[in-house]
Length: 346
Picture (tube, rainbow, N blue to C red):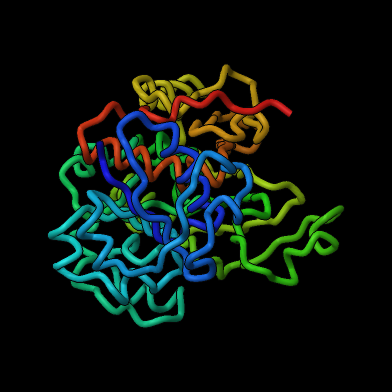
């Protein structure tokens, strides 16, 4: 059995990790880490695991945990892992970080967008960006994984086939994104109160959202050149889910058949990326509670633009599910182990 520790187990992504790993046939959770609930029963924080989990919450002592676990998941705020990670921890066990600390390869870009000093930039080069559908082979041999952000996961997978094939002008790319409120975390914040969110939709982080450079970097790798884009997220009154709609001018001479074929070829062997039938638009309700990403593309010949679409659950494939998918690859397990969840229907 793979011994697992979770730091930040009482956040939304941490709790989702617990839900997935309790169903996993090859894992045993040995540490439920939480600064806010030390010595309290985990099931008193999340009643859905009453009489399933009897453990109490422990501290965030990563060094002690690294001596007990084979892999540690850190579902923590930006800057936490970078402030404590060292060779002792990485020599003891593997680490999968759900924060942004090691996602962006240029430390100056990270510090600019996140507004904090990076405490361990020496590990940035080593960290593998854990988007399994694109970096599968590198993930298998890694000891440190930078688990992608939710918006970057959905955006990259929705746009990647056309970026990789060179069928769109990347300088014209615009991404419109919408997310449920769980994407903002479990902490109490006035903008996320029920009365602020219900019956409302609003843009936020306009031109300044911290996932922008991550998306640009990953699509830049696909396109083979630097990418600058507009990314505008919106908060919508639902618990979980992300919907991406992206627009870009396609290259002159490109046919709708070429664009469609790019998606089918890119994801033909991918279990978790579902290319929908032609004309079907992705919907968040058809991926909720699952590790699936539904994508599709529409060619607007009138405007000469490709409209790229994606939907996924921001807590599962956008965080915990993807982290478990990475773990499976790192330990040589079936990639879908513990993740063959049928999406929930309302």
